[in-house]
Image 1 (cartoon, rainbow, N blue to C red):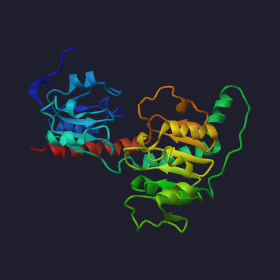
Image 2 (cartoon, rainbow, N blue to C red):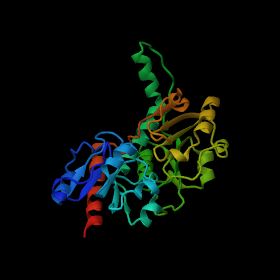
Image 3 (cartoon, one colour):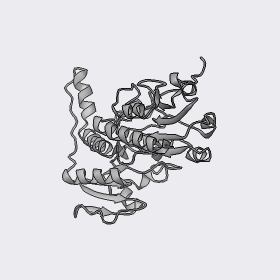
Image 4 (tube, rainbow, N blue to C red):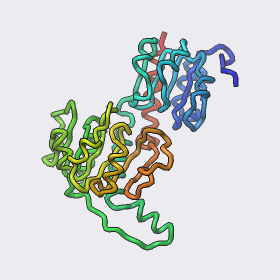
Length: 316
């Protein structure tokens, strides 16, 4: 398949890849067209593969990017590219240093997905504590089986990372009657929403939380792994709506088998889709396909922000 070169009329081009908008239907994209850009959709409704990107990117000056990996060597193939705008905050799939050396701006939309991710965190916690997916499966297979659940009121929620998302989770959890303790490398000390909220050290959060929820940026090595799982309370639940790199899957799976970890609810995976892995298929795991920011409201906020950021970056 030959590469695309230019569109009719020689207009500058922008490639659009996020699954939530790559069918071309979002109204924010009209703003790019009105500004004189032709839009290219390499894989409508799907994550594009490298071949699809290679066919779409030549001649493009802008890129509204999803979660696809963009290495420095790959980006170097497209010298006309001036800016990559993410419709979210995650940039761990982009070689930002290489992009900077090539004169490519990398832009994010901080806060756009915060409410959606925070609400999913609470939803996963409630689902896990009451075993909702398991009970639903029993009924769908004709079984009338029940497991006793746990109430979250009075439980202690530990937040590892308490930025925009973590603070929203804390506020909602406090409203449900939980106690909340949080660790953050740069804590916002003025955030003190309740007497039932406290800033704690990393080790204190691990040791005294009934549920641990992860809201930290990507890590070079897992923060929950062989060296830290033993610090967790027996029977703890873990929720990850942040980054897959924060968890050591093998260590967590072993802890699920022994019961030291009661449940894992995760929205993120090292490989997406992850396939039928032992962790995904474990009876005490709830897995969702990276839907934290996939709400109509979050998509709208993130898309408008990504478009505005890109237009500003491409201004002559």
